[in-house]
Every structure is written in structure tokens, then in C-alpha cells.
Image 1 (cartoon, rainbow, N blue to C red):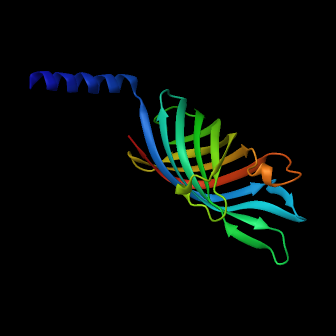
Image 2 (cartoon, helix red, strand yellow):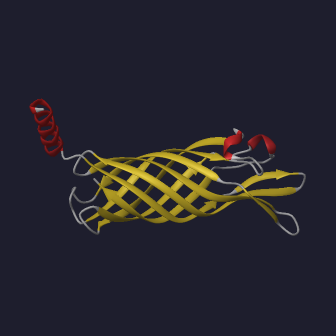
Image 3 (spheres, one colour):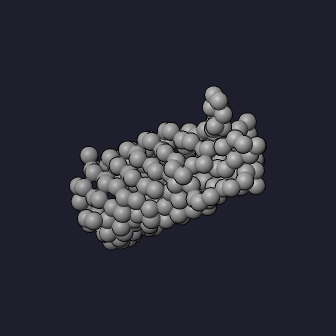
Length: 195
């Protein structure tokens, strides 16, 4: 019994010395695609669109001014054909990401503005395909942005994020004249639990 108490005390002391802090957050907001024309086929132009976004992030602050973040986001999207009238069907976009964070104030400050950059993948599920069907098209990209975190209580923070995701366009084999990269702008607000 004494050995377990000693191990617990040493582990607690080590965690206090290194002051490593984590956060788990959930956020919701708007997601808008720009340069969203995928291409054309048979004289019809096709686009990808998005509206709301739901995201989860785990942040590990290993320094007073730096941190790392991994996350997942669901984007409610649609696949739109520019016909008369326009036709649209649901097409969700799932994203996984890693970001490096650089804070403007030190760990423990009540308000912490930050800038961020990192890599991500976006998986587009064609109309009629389920997440479990294995028919998703995954494209990789990079993202950058910034935000602010504000401590509400000793355990809870609110956060605001503004990020731009640059991704290769999906379904390139299906269309002629596909040009450029897909730009996705995220504007979100969330609640984080600090530990």
C-alpha cells in the first residue's frame, strides 16, 4: 500500500513540475466553400457546398506559449448540379486535422489569442454513399488561422476559431476542366474543458 501511495505522490509531483495542460472542446459554426466548382460534364457545372460544421478538438499545451491540437469535424455538405432548376443532394464532408498553436499570452492567462497552422484530410462521400460504404474520396491539404480562448471558470473556456482549409478537389476523374484548390472557411465558437 505504501508503495502505491509513493508512486501516486511522485506522479502528481512530476505532473505539477512539467505543467502540461490539456483541453477537450466541442464547437459549432459555419463552413463555407470557395472556389467550389468541381468541373463540368455533359454541359452541366457541378459544385460542392457546405453550411454548418460540428467539431471536436483535443489540445495539448506542452509549453507556456505553444501547443498541439488534433481534431475531427463533420461538415454538412451538398453536391449541386447547375441545371434549371438547380438540383442538390446531400454530401457530408468529414475532416481530421493536426495543428500547431502559438499563443499570444502565457499558459494560465484568462484570455489567450492564438495563431495556428497544420495539415488535414477531408473525406467526401458521394451522393447516396454511406460513411460505412467505403466509397469516400479522401483529399489532403493544409490549414491556417487563428482564434481566441477565454477562461470562464477554473475548468471551462470558451473559444472562437477562424480557419482556412486548402484541399485538393475531389472527383477529378469525373469532370473536365477541374481547376485550383478547394478553399473552406470555418467560423466557429465552442466550449472547452481544461484539465
